Length: 100
Image (cartoon, rainbow, N blue to C red; front, top):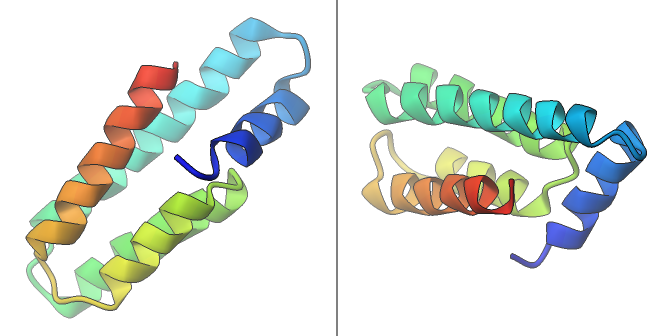
């Protein structure tokens, strides 16, 4: 993941040396990511798809994850239910789990 360093630096800046806080922040990020991915996967109209994609983009921006921002933008540029975007987001989510 090309932005892992920036994402990790953001977590470190927010949590300092507190490993428990870092784990909690990462868990919150993962929970938000999974919730929005779920909503995105169930969206059948442009409005719901767009809202979920915008929330994912905001999540990525707030945690300095350029990869998530780009994936969310890709979702915004496609039709609701696009399986390629959903698969990329699932792979991204799995990479977050693996770094925890």
